[in-house]
Image (cartoon, rainbow, N blue to C red; front, side, top):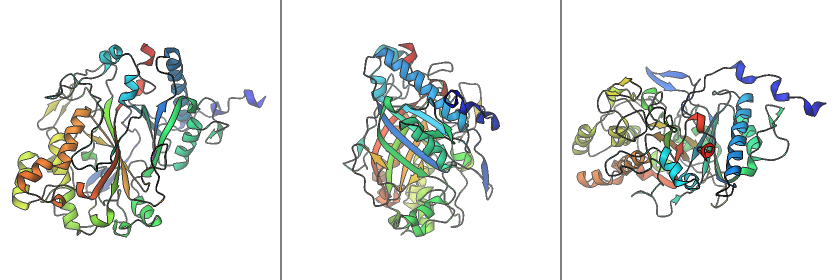
Length: 450
């Protein structure tokens, strides 16, 4: 009978485009590169969706949590069988907030959670709740979600089908085939759904379609609304450099630990004052995005980000004294690049200036989200970015973000807001920190140890 026929087993799609799944969730096998006037740039997936949730499993119900872990593992496996791992299939990343770990026995979490070794925060969990920063608006929302899903693909339909199969009950399909084990919507209450795009000239196209002020000034080939490329190969952590354990000095994690291959993740929604940004001429935007010594012409959307171009503290301060400008990259590169040749926990030596922070953010026209159980949704489109960044600890991100506001340096060198990075043109509405486990533990981590 047809109901006994294994439709999804007719063709094993994963064998048609076999890519080895990395130990981390954040590495993206199959992503190709383009040459932008000699600068290697990753061609990131075009379409994105983030779903934030809270578990419906009662706290303290060990059996139910273990069953939920098994169901989520099976659901993700079914989606990835039909849409194989890769840009032409789908990438699914699952991260966990502090509230998730607070529902588990503290002793169990303490045993396995990486601890910060950064000065002043020693012994803290490497995952901590986010804070608001000096230049955030007073109404920024510090979220408390338990589980966060990030979907990305070159094909929007793959994401839409996966979302429906996972979170909507009743006869969903994956690539025309019945979704038999994918539904886990009863395990989660969806709190927000956030969608967007990156690369391929979509910011200008989508901005014009939604009548966003300033969109007509976005360069036609720009990857992001602010007009520059963010996926330079030399500007993104390669391999497992963003993991808790890989570089010394951030956490006590070691290879082989439960969360080895995991990383601290920050998620925020940021509105962009696009019309104000493009009121400045190209050379002024270039200096505020990078540093005051940049001279690339307007058609260069991907200025070189190789280690030789890195700005460390001494050069940053000289730029501020001489030119009265500190660019966004110059604000944080000394915290996101190795300051000397460094040996990783895996015996690899990475040269000075190597980046170890990873961005996987994407642009949006949502205001602020497509769906929310608590936030008022404005149907008027707004230029924005759903920022997603990965690094060795939440404490490290906090230090980075404080430098991005640049309050201390602004006072030291008497700089106006518009000459201190580009925070003046941003409006962060929501923030939360998460832990992105290694792929082996992406489904409700630690539950199997209860």
